[in-house]
Length: 334
Image 1 (spheres, rainbow, N blue to C red):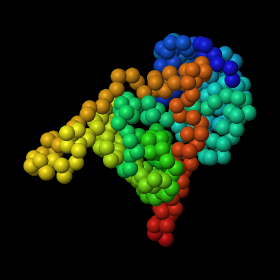
Image 2: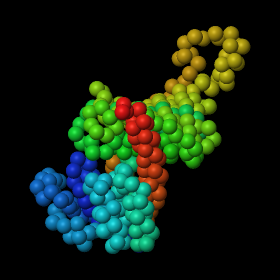
Image 3: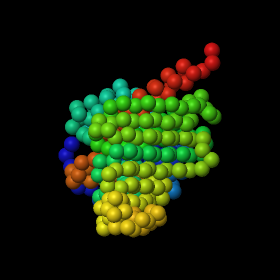
Image 4: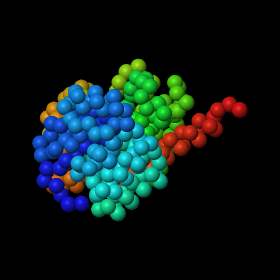
């Protein structure tokens, strides 16, 4: 693809998330929001009127006037819609998960290669303010713990919680640890739906790092927390509000043994630990993601989360789901 100075970007699918893609695109500098398409004409009309953006009667009609496309349709339609755009040489930002299975993901990526266009995957937590603020302090985390809990809602209950929620943390942890996955174990239970509603996974990476991930959509409270432990300290992030803190030994105390030798004898953690607050600049993560997509279309920067990254996260998530389903099948009474 040839870089475009002021790209025309449209949105296919304007449900709960697609609406926000369209809202932000309409406000971005150096972007022409070329319109929306949804297979539900009434929904398209509602969003078009609310945002003041053009409504297209067909996907082809939308693509006729676009240089790039945000794909926010249901996962089962990601391949069809992405292929339509890529076939015209238009880059796509595809919401997570990239596809319902690896075969479909591979076909999307092959279509992109053939067209000379790129695929960006919508793993928006990479742009979370807390994650960005923590980056300067990260140094080979060796133990990671994530909790992503949400109250029950009928949305996305057609897929297991692993592809609905946990895949966010799969991608995030893989990007932060930065070494290949070596092993995994997982368990989960269907509670309110035929699919798994609460899941736990343990990932082991080359180099010794370990991550424990928990995701639930039958929780009484919302929680999106990530904790990373490394030799230089402990990073605690609240992904829900984009804040966190980095805890490390105070610089004047190189080791606890040195502190004891000096006769301090402190039992209060505050006396030996420095707490560094982490917070972002208030920019919405989805806005940062779309700015990155815009800049990639303009040829100014690569997509922060490539199609290959999306495939890798999908592969691990599907492996987790397969192990859970096997475990559930093996433990059900005859």
